[in-house]
Length: 503
Image (cartoon, rainbow, N blue to C red; front, side, top):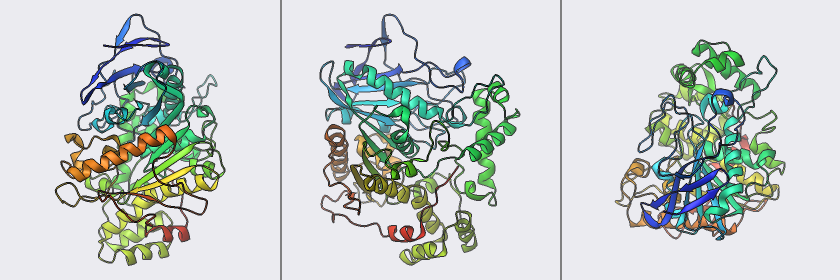
């Protein structure tokens, strides 16, 4: 077993199960446990240790109620939740490019221990791969009023955790063969919007050179909406919506209260935007840590020095319907109510009806809502970055058949096992429609290579967007696809505009 020296102590790992030439180290603390005196505070440095720390197991996950296939669940009392994992093919002096992965999960669930985030295949392309846990739910993204002492807990503590992990990478990654000057930060869904936020946050400046955002979600809270969520969660938890009241509630109590608040929106068709997908947390834009939402800030050039690669899937929201986490709309009146709740113009809805003449009400809802939340938002993130002078690539994942010729949606999360090269893991087969065929494995090889090339050189293998637009890379099992194939649903959104959503 190889030993690596970090600034807080020595660590050792194990050969990766899928490739013994790769060393994997799991559960390295990058910050102190964010509880006790550190609860609702910015992350603090991890305590040093003596001897060699055996990093064989993933660290505890952040407080949450989710239980995901193949991944550990949270248990009350688990506190050392700010840890990271490393897959490396090298050692000191190798100066390999680094990819840091931020998982998604609506800001309330998920972890770096999910099997689709195994970094072995990417490390096999010459990268040092880092995945991390960060605070979720109220602990990470709930607004906490000032304490009676006048101390002000920061918003966006989950983002501050991510910055602390990137600072740890800057200070320590050379020991694992990584180059601190060639760091790419990547994420999907809420992890992708986290990446977009990091691109425009002063505290993160200089910690990475490149960024990858898959299916960024259109959801940043305003200070007002964040304060209203705090009031609702506090009431459900039976405490006052003050610092003193909230800190008196255990993490589990706030997790349970948050779940009940979300469920109340799910059950109430008259509750407005949250009824359709009750994700109640998101980055708080408009305060000291994040003055502007990332789309607006990128349009103003705040991230033009960061090279950006964006991807979204063609049928994002069908996954949320398949797992039962979104509303079901059975008649045209409900669809009209949905459009009114999001102030979507009639012309936009008519354009979808014209392009999907055989679609049910639910299918129209899924198509429009998926583009509102993910597809159009991601495309615009790439476009505004390019118009502001950034070096930008845009891709769309459209693969709809598995290796046996079975139809399967190109839905949310389906692209990530291909990019990580984990399509053979049975835990991801629901996402990709069953065991992969050779065409699927070939697609995974191409996508993994593109990520590795982008992290190494900034060029994933297709041209950059220009301020006027440009080619969009289409990811499918077909190897030859028309260059720059346009998404038919972009034109109606260009005419209608895109409302920015606040959870």
